[in-house]
Amino acid sequence: MTEPKESLHDGGSRLWTPSARQQQRIAYRRARAVRSGLIAAASTLLVFGAIVVALLSSPGWPRTRQTFFNWHYATEAFPHVLQGLWLNIRVMVICAVLVLIIGLGLAVLRTLRGPIFLPLRIFAAAYTDLFRGLPLLLVLFLVGFGIPALRLAGISYQQTVVYGGVALTLTYSAYVAEVFRAGIESVHPSQRAAARSLGLSAAQTMRFVVLPQAIRRVIPPLLNDFVSLQKDSGLIAVLGDPIDAIRAAQIETANTFNYTSYVVAGFLFLMLTIPLTRFTDWIAKRQGWYGTGGSPTI
Image 1 (cartoon, rainbow, N blue to C red):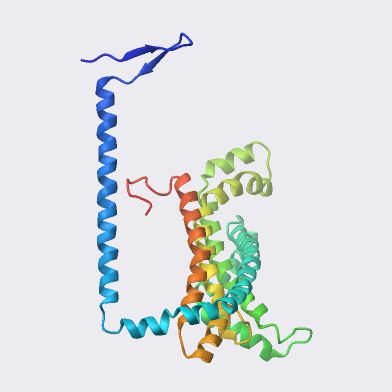
Image 2 (spheres, rainbow, N blue to C red):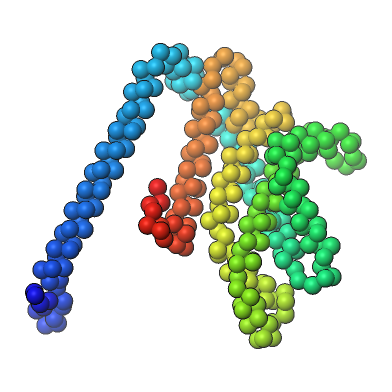
């Protein structure tokens, strides 16, 4: 059996060097990694190459390219769609802040102990059941067209983008509240018992012990919800007046009778969602959510 070797360096300190058996292991792992990389690259090229060949050789591809992937109409529509996308970004950021606040508040209400808090728990449960059960498009119609129809004093009926933001906030607060509640319930009861035995009140236990652990655990699913919120911000176009990216693409299509502007809008949304999705994967990987079963993240 080959013994580990030691080498003498300039400083006089003896450092460990891998044995011949360890060097063989390292070389084997390196060869396996290269082999896996080559197989992955070949299979990827084969699959995507087959898709591209099938697409380009289809009988209707020239007409599809002219209708959906026309470069002239794409460059013409890009400034207008990009200007509309700025509205989507602003709506998404404002709604994300409100969703975080309302969702966390609902989750805390639903996890309160004691019979005196039963009305608050019923309210939080009814809220989440209602807005998780209703389709987002229906909530947009009810809020966007229903509230202006009430003719309430002191409320403007022209800011349809505000109604769209309210509908997004109502719906996504219900989803995020359940995410926060799952994080709160995942904290072991011994944590609460230990905090109370140290003299902390129930509110202090929730603030300093439970919530920090719960929020850290639910960051990846929260980011997933915000990816969905970013995409669904384009649905406010159904209310008519807001000129967001989808509405701008619709106007361009009505003027040119070409659907390339929709492809441009989709491309811009992808440029927003893909980095956020990869960031979510990175956070999840750091917390050990992915790869524990040996499966790759992509």
